[in-house]
Image (tube, rainbow, N blue to C red):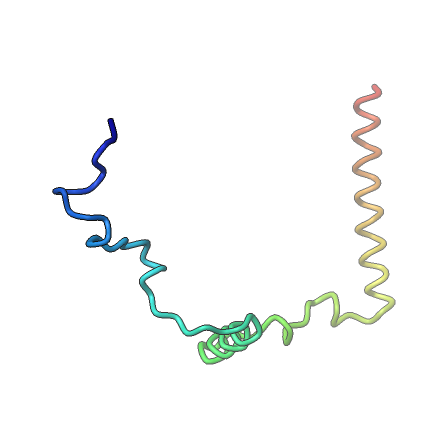
Length: 90
């Protein structure tokens, strides 16, 4: 015996699958490059800078100062790890 999966005995071809909201939206086909270009254009129009134009504070520093900052950070991390190892061993 087979089950009747149709609502009100109407044929399956008479019903239309509604899908999701995204399926019903009319979107023009576009490539990834075009989508990124539109995204960046919309962000700049909204007053936001694109990430490619932003420079970090570290990149603005003199190379010697940049080295000192990176070396100091490395030394602090190593000191913290050695301190943890010392506490575990004690």
